[in-house]
Image 1 (tube, rainbow, N blue to C red):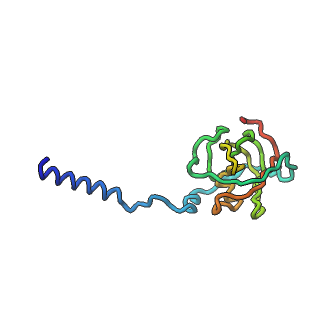
Image 2 (cartoon, rainbow, N blue to C red; image 1 turned 135 degrees about the vertical axis):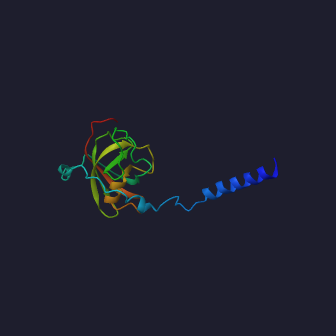
Image 3 (cartoon, rainbow, N blue to C red; image 1 turned 135 degrees about the horizontal axis):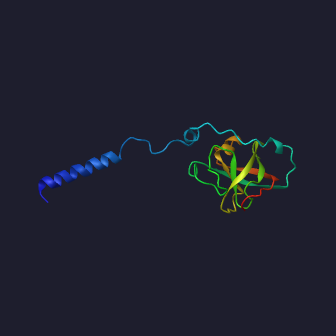
Length: 156
């Protein structure tokens, strides 16, 4: 390789490295990512407000958001992280539940539309919309009570 070709190669490599070190942000804060869209109008599940629970369990809930947003859920719905929905390891799709944050007593009635892998440390994964309703976004995981109000008839 002659001196001129070597010089061009070094200049080219330097330009590539400098371009890769641009000032574009590589990430944004968690809160700003989650406030880009207006949440959709939730399904009206008011008729379940006074229903006696068929089953009650307590444990830790987490939420899932942008990594799955727009992907197909186990029930066949398109996951919208701002909607009110949840994933459970064993409940049939369409099961109606009330989830109550045991720290602040806020609750939300939702429909199971996704399946989560079994985890001994979690009982349910909530959509971001649910986590916002239950005021648990900043903590990420929270002790909750899950009450089954109606068993689903969808896929198990």
